[in-house]
Length: 342
Ligand SMILES: Cc1ncc(COP(=O)(O)O)c(C=O)c1O
Image 1 (cartoon, helix red, strand yellow):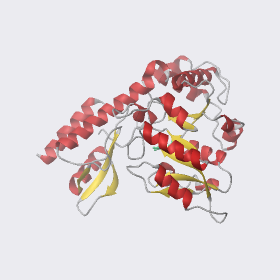
Image 2: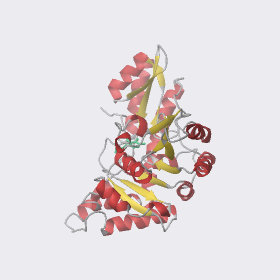
Image 3: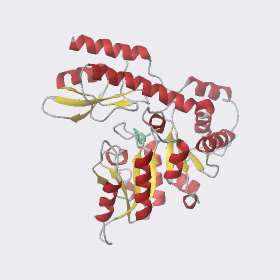
Image 4: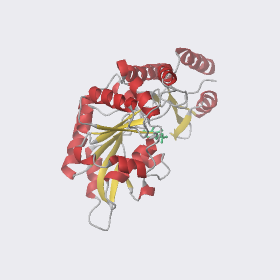
């Protein structure tokens, strides 16, 4: 059975395993100070065209998010997120466990707008309430949508006006950058946010995220903060090796492009059958709205998750494709669906 459950169901891209095998007996310096991490940092700085960026490798996304929020907010400050944001829905209160409240506003297709951010700022006044200090967005979002350059700029302006840090969760930044509707280059993106991460776990790595700190005044002592939050593994070189491979010869974007192309085929299958979508498909997550019976069959056959009950007869389920999804699996989905809907 092939599942469309997630984009971290497979191991790692073979080129990563090859490099890891090649250097398996090499001895490395610990805690991210080895030559592979250095090389990966150099490649990332080149890619984003920001020689001054600080880059840290962290094993997981939740860990990165809680580390960022807890490091850069003062104790009384909160982070603003879309109601659908990963830190709000899927992190088991990890952010709140650091003492910082997640203040949510209604998202539009999973995205924040300057108006929604401003409303959160305006409704938090005085010292009897938490004070907004950071905006959290993800690109792509939980609904697979992406921020345009204009949208990100307007959020940036709103953050500047209100003295808020802007943090982008890039667990699926590859999918966002290679979307056919994307108009944002990574060099621009890096200049519009204060910090962001480049997700490895969901784009061909065994695990690992590369946190990029763009803003100078956030850089000091960050390694201390990582270590204190248990986010600095001794074998940091394992992440360095993986990003070294992903960042070479455009592999990172190539893998994301493949996942998006597979997702487009999934979306086309449903579109051709006349079904609509919960959010416009443009990256590697597709959210068709289907009659309940069909949704149930597809969930059990392909491991899809239920996302929302739309009305008394229809359900939205999620299909996720990955760097490793094979065209044959899409063909199988097409044939299976045709069999059910013929
Ligand atoms: C946007 C986003 N951020 C963060 C995470 C959390 O990553 P992890 O499960 O590695 O903690 C995920 C994982 O699904 C995600 O989709």
